[in-house]
Amino acid sequence: MRIMFVSPGGHAQGGAERSLALLMAGLLERGHEVHVAVMETGDASTAFREVGATVAGIAGEGTPWGRRHGSAPQMLASTLVGAPDLVRTVGRLRQMIARSRPDVVHSNGFRSHVLSPLLGAGPAPIVWSLRDRAPSRWQRQVLQHASRSAAAVAANSTFTADQLHHPSVRVISNPIESATVPDKSTAQASLGLADDRHVVAVLAHLHPSKGHDIAIDALAGWNPNERPLLLLAGGDLYPDSARYRSELQARATSAGLDEDVRFLGAVDDIGTVLAAADVVVHPCRYPEGFGRVVPEAQAAGVPVVATALGGVLDLISHDENGLLVPAGSAQALRDAIDSAMWPGERRTRLIEMGRLSAARFAPARHVDAMERLYREVCGHVDQPARASLQPVGSRAGSTPGLADDTDEVGQQITL
Image (spheres, rainbow, N blue to C red):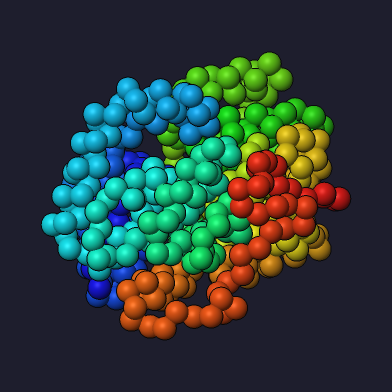
């Protein structure tokens, strides 16, 4: 089978691009032809070539829609200003798809999803990977309208699936490749860390939504004699990342934590950071579609503390394979970290159950599910009954689909 992917993101370190590269590699190993059209410049095209995909080309310098969390007027204004570039991008994508003559066209993100009615895929069905929740109601309405062009939608969590009314939505979780993890002493030495204190790590690109500041505030309330070292591992993926880094550094200095907070920058080898960490925290302020650092840490045998929002609720059962805390609460985050970093029954349970749950996200399982989906939309197999699909439902207290105008999906947590 020949699959043409359309990737809106140009950065190889993005979660959507990392998931896509793993899917491509798995499909190629099974004898499929993999082509990809990239919508903006960056190192993603190099990463896709490295796994063996044929890069059909780069369609443009990026789509002119401004910030993801921008208002409708802001998005409309930036789209109008960039309309000529957008028209050229669509034209190039159509040419690349026509030349590749794919059996399936697979869209990998919001920006390519909304363009899918214009892509001229011909007889090839279009499949979406829905990897995040559109942050506003109007964006979800745009997505809903564009989804009419998709033969099927693979959502990476119940949370992302719930935003869309579509006859063929199913949950297919992101693939996670287990990192190579050295022994703890080797990892600490390579990072220049002393071995006489606990280590807490945040692995997330520098953006205010990721909640690095909450982790710093949690550290500030600790008894200095027992305070762990905080590692912030994340690159400058976003336009305002450098400014945000400066704000975080100033915050740490103001709290007297210059010796307790270490900024590692972009880290290619996350296994070393995971090996050095006693606890990984994911303190995001807003719901995310998946939260891939959670199963990455679990697979490495590191307890996870995360905000009880969004796709994380598909990944963590509180006090079984991880700990969940309310969004924005430095006190709750501090208490949860403290309960997970010391040896004992809870820490042992979190490690053991975390490893078991992380196995669900093996890349081979993801490729299996996507192969079945491709065959289904191409008519190579009978479409399964709805009851056989992984269920897509709402959680207690949430309303699925467009009627839900809030992203604050969470749980009440008691430690």
